[in-house]
Length: 125
Image (cartoon, rainbow, N blue to C red):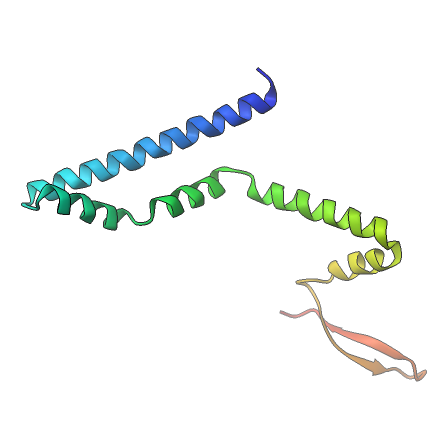
């Protein structure tokens, strides 16, 4: 079995397990509601309301289980390489300024003693 087949079969097994867990929860909750005296149809709807949006839970669970951050990093790297190929000077400057993101804020262009304008940075958050 190739690595890709293994990865996709792993994802399929994990999602099938998640589906089974969700079904089991809803069935148990429905049964509990029926034992409390609710009609079966109303008991099922109450169990579904208690669980929440099934699709959203599946998507959020997959985000936690998968390497979403790695996929996004790969997209960013590919985008950066495309930009570098199109215009190396601008892409280089953009890469350099990205290093400051989150660690420094540019406050203003200020003249120094020689009369030139320089960028003042504040590294406090």
